[in-house]
Amino acid sequence: MATSRPHKVLGYLESKKNLAGCACGVAGLGLTVTGLAGTYWPVVVAGLYGAGALIAPPERVAPPEFDDPQARLGLVREQFGLLQEYLAEVELPAAAAGRLAELMELYGALLEPGWVAEVLATEPEAVHALSRTIRLDVPECVDTYHRTRWWNRLTPGGESPERHLERQLDLLYEEAERLTADLREAEARRQQTHTTYLEERGRS
Image (cartoon, rainbow, N blue to C red; front, side):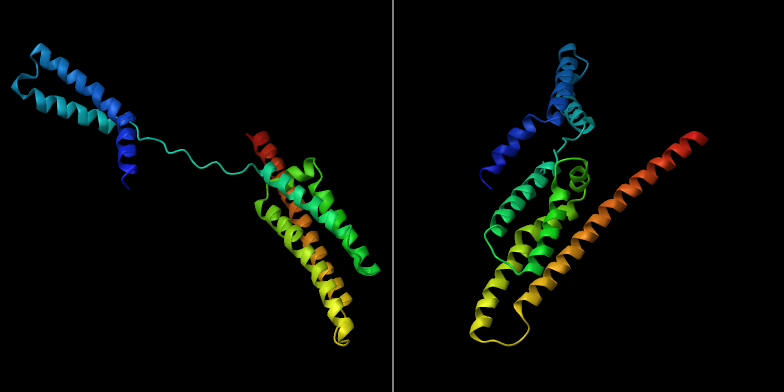
């Protein structure tokens, strides 16, 4: 608190309100020198200063600068690269490995630099969902499979870890398909909006 008060004082001294008030106050001093303000010149100067401060436009507070959408997408690409390196070191059953390959191919197509990635970058929720899946969901699926399989060898029984892994990857693939469909729908709406604009412009 002690350090913010001098900062506020300095900020006001440099503000548009103070500068406008000072300019009007100087005009009041000019009236005093010419004798037009009379004996009430302090009131005139103070009044003109206050009027100038009131009519001056308020200071504009700059909005915060958030990350560029393309920069966020670049981070997701880095995460995807790390995931690929991790998956290259693990062994999975054939069915799960095939499904995972399809899933990774779909992620790669969405993240490949180009117009598709540009559309993805305009949808923050889609970028967040994709990042969460790449950072958390896929690694968790693979890691829990390996750990559960080890325990299952010691105490056989119950549903197989392979079935759980296949089901998890199926769910993630369905989620990725929904994400892709949402992006396609966004592009369709954009096309329809432009068609409507051209039709209205033609009628006008």
